Each structure stands twice: as C-alpha cells, then as structure tokens.
Length: 265
Length: 293
Image (cartoon, rainbow over all chains, first blue to last red; front, side):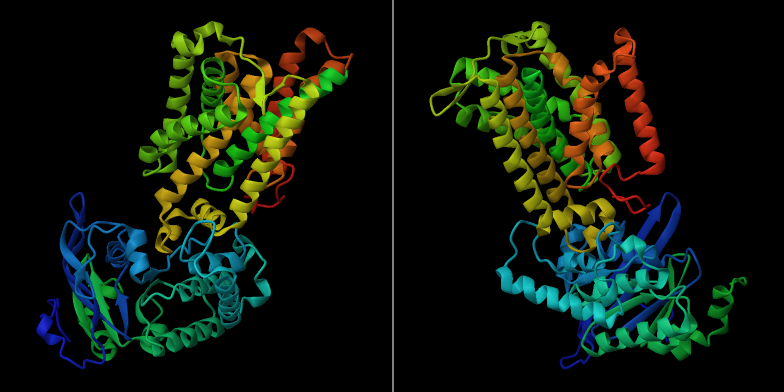
C-alpha cells in the first residue's frame, strides 16, 4: 500500500502488462474559493480493474468524477486518457472517448420511456438519420432489449422512468451505462439503498462487464460491495488521496477506519 | 358568419404554427423563450418588405422570412444557450423588448408605430391569393408540413436528444450529446418556422404594426402551449383552438356585459391556467400525473 501515491512513471507500463493504465490522474488540484476539494491527487485507473473510491462525505470523490468527465476544470494537474491529456476538452467529447458515468441522484431522462433512456445513449448521432440506417436501428433495439432483460427491466420498457420504483431506477441508470460501449465506467454510489437481492444482481452485472474488459471506478459506501468487487481501493479524505492499494490492506488500516467512521485523524 | 369563421380558422392556423414551434423548444428541449412574438414579427416584416420591394411570391417571401428569423435566433442562441436556462429566458425577454423598440422606431423598414400598410396579396405561381377561402387553404398548406416536419423530428434521434436534454442536461452531456449544438439548432429551427407564420400573417392582414408582436403575444403563445399540453404533439393545436375561439364565444354570451368582455376573457384565461396547474399540470392533452412533461 502506498501513502499519497505519486503517478507512476511511464516506464512502469511494461510491455505485456495485463492491466495497462487507461486513465491517469496526475497531481490534480481543484479548489472552491479557499476550500481544497481535490488536493494533489494522483491515481491510475487500469484496464479491466475495479478501483473503489472510499472516504467520508466531503472527501472529494464525486468532485474527482466531475473533473475526469470535464464537468469541472482542474486548477492544475493533468488527466491522461491513453497517455493523452483530456483536460479542457468538452464533457461530451470526453464521454465520446469512452468515459461514461452514473450520478448519485441518477439523473434519468424522467419523461422518456425506459427503452428510450437506453436507446438515446446508444445513438452515435443526434440528427435525423443515424449511420447504418434501419439495420443498425434494429440492431440497437435488439441490443437495448437484451440490456433491459439483463437488468430486469424488459417488462417496463414502455414505462416512463419517472414512474419506476427506486430499485428499478437504479437498474435503469445501470442499463444506460451498459448501453454506452464506454471503456471506463465511473459509478457514483450505484448500489446505495438497494436490498440484498438487488445488489447481488448488481454485482453480478458489474462482474460480467469487468470480465468483458470494462474498467470501473466506483464510489461506494456499502462495505460488502466494496469487498466483493474491488481490485484496488483508493481512500480519499478532505480532497487528499491518503491510500491506494489492495482492499485488505486499506480496509484494515486503523488510521483510515478512524477517519472513515468519523474519529479524529 | 362564414367570413368570421374563415377569419378565425385562418388565424388559428397561423397561431398554431407559432404554438407548435414554441412547444418544440419549450416542451421538448426545456428552453423557455419569451421572444417568440419577436421572431413572428421579424418574419412578418421581412415578408412584407420583400413583397413590397422585390416580389410578393411566396417562394421568395417565406424563405426570406425563415432565413432572417433563423439568423436572428442564432445570434440569440449562440451565446445564451451555452449557459444555464434562466439566462436564455432573460436574454429572450431582452430580445423581445429590443425587437418591439426596433419595430416601433425603424420607420424606413417597419413604418414605425403606424406600421406597414399596403402589403400586396401573396403570389402563388402568378396567382394573387386574396380570397379568404384560398388563404385558409394556403395557411393549412403551411400548417400541415410544419406539423409533419416537427413530428418527424421529434420521433427521430434528434427529438430523443432534445427530450434527454430537457430531462437532464448533465446526463445528456455524459451520454456524449453536444447539448449546446442541439439546443441552438432547435431554437433556429423553431424560430425559422415562426417566420413562416409571420409571412402568412403579413400577407393575410395586408397591414402589420408592432402591436401584434409585443410581449403579450409571446405570453399568449406560451399560454396556448401550457393549456393545450406542453411537450405533446396535439396540445399546442388544442390550446390554440381554445384560446382563439374563446373571445368569440364570450361575445356570443349575451348575459355577459359586452363592454367588459376583454376583462372577463383575461380572468377566464388566468383562472384556467391556475386550475390546470393544480389539477392537470400536463395541460388538456398532457398526462394527468406528476410525470407530465
């Protein structure tokens, strides 16, 4: 386990590395007025691995997602996607590179049907015609149907998102990110409030996509999920990365546990 | 009576074009514009100017009206839509006020407060469309394509992107949608089509002045959309028919004091809006539940 891990040198990416760095966060800083919400954070997201961001409320976890996706600009530091800086790129361009995210408050397209929510994110263009014509459209519908089957929403395909139950809304958020074809998923508390059966279903979905090559960075408070899915855990507090390592090492650190559960650091 | 009904039907067609195009941005993209009457006016003045100084041909006047309103809306949309929605409302209100001032003061083009008089009848393949029945058919011939094009657009991926932006702009961004470009295009499309209504109005009336294009017209158009059903295909049509027909209906109610018809009409509109917002926020055609778009 490393404390306040610096960004590894490019040489560290040896040829044949089964988990090469897909996205590198390099000495990132961001302040709101005098409050440092991201303070010299460096972190690598490696292909096919699940990195969980852990930390108390206000640690800067969601801010880090906002910085990665371009919803916020860093004051200094860099974010590299496959070795190329994406800082300053507009957020829709970063999404098109293959960085997808979910939101803590879901932000579904509430007045659209479940099927439309999924189809909309699949469509490569936003104009009258899509590349590939009717054949591609039929393929997208079929794929959307498959995703809805897997997330247990097939029977609700024609229901508006706003009329779904809480757990169904969570799975629609998941279905939407599954439809993106993104290489990195940034999941902001995707399983919060789910019952045991639902979050096991969620874990199964997540594992199958990670096995298929998706890289995941997840913010999660449920320790069962953290232990059940993480390859690495990054611990943030007050904007600083305090630890980055294997789940066992990070979770057993009494100092970090004290911070996480609200005791004085 | 027939002349009254023909006049009413023609004005309904013209206002329906405006309500449908306003609904396109308001109901589907979540962009609230208070400048729709300004675009209506720009279309009307442009068509009138072209008709009086170049040709009254519809094939020249309507494209000119669409082009000028489209360009003007682009000037408004490009800066205003890159920021939050509230700024667009403020910017559109500013444009509406500015447009009224220009319509009133630019005498060489608009005729100032006196308006533009002597607009020749619309020319269609060399035939002057001046008969009320013919003009109604012409207005219908413009309304139907507007409905069709709008419906096709809304059912396409463009329409889905618009609705996605309306429901969550940040989620649309995160899905790779170029939100600013889509919103800008939707405003340009909507305003250009409002220019058609302006051209029709100028030819139909033969006289236009600033009073038809003031803020209260924008508010009336918004009321048509809201009462009919925001974000529905049929709602703006229903709202237009209702709000255009109501004044006539009131004047036929002999038990009402005829000198107070205007005030009664305003009270009825206000009451209808309040009741709708409480009991049917989706409008007459829209959904009854919280989910009304």
